[in-house]
Image (tube, rainbow, N blue to C red; front, side):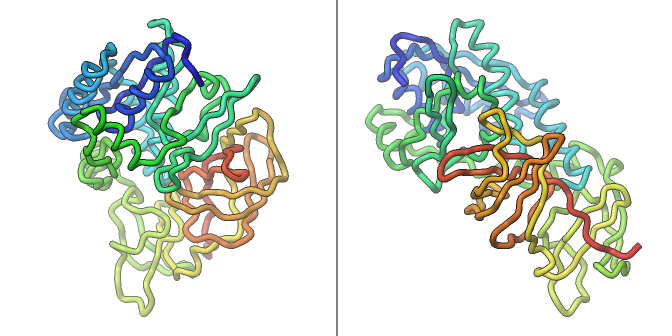
Length: 365
């Protein structure tokens, strides 16, 4: 989509992707304004130094904006990030679910609060460095997978509404990472070879258990017992917050076969463990479904991704009342995890998605 002088607000993380996105938007005739969100409370600045949206990231974004000749602003979203993303992250673990904070950040902050900021600056569009394609048609926007299959991030954008998508730009969607780094080198950007972050931005060392201990406090953990599928007590545990479906590491020994977490019951604080084959399921349900066309498409043959790194599995999706859906898998899948997003694809087009709900393990009372 050509800019023709229109203004766009670009989220700049200080990395190579959003930096190159700024240059590409300029070349397509957009009047680009760079914005970096400050999402770290003052007492967390030390651990944020090398993280997305930390002090060094803000400095890198400002340097790129200066080199490209675009204005750059820092928007303080620390309070909103705490309430919308970090508190959600902690509360999901307390409910026995495994959260996906990137989806929440995209929906509510990057394509939510920043859009309000964009309007105040006279910009009708928000742009990011996501590896996804947004096709702008006459009356709607279509979200598709990015060209670089290894980097595709359409999964993290499934919850955006049509109004958000119609005012969103993702200029990197049709490109691959090596070409983006080459553009950055040609532009003389110092972030050209900056290493991509592979972690949750607010969890130091990707150690979510240590983060929860610091954020919640040990006294807030839901302690209970570990049981097998026959209802036999195995051991005590220090909190359901320490477990996720499919986990093997950290479980008590003494079994002739490896044990895996099958279910986490937030009502009884029980963690149910069993054999690896017990993790395999033929169907599951999701709630809070977002259909990108606005109306359910059901029943429909789809490919469903049950986590970001999942390759996708053939399935039939059936819409249910109350914003829910049932997914019938052609090939059973392992470790379908409550709290994770299940995203529906028709080829490379995102047609919808929802949040996986718990399937209690069949344990005797």
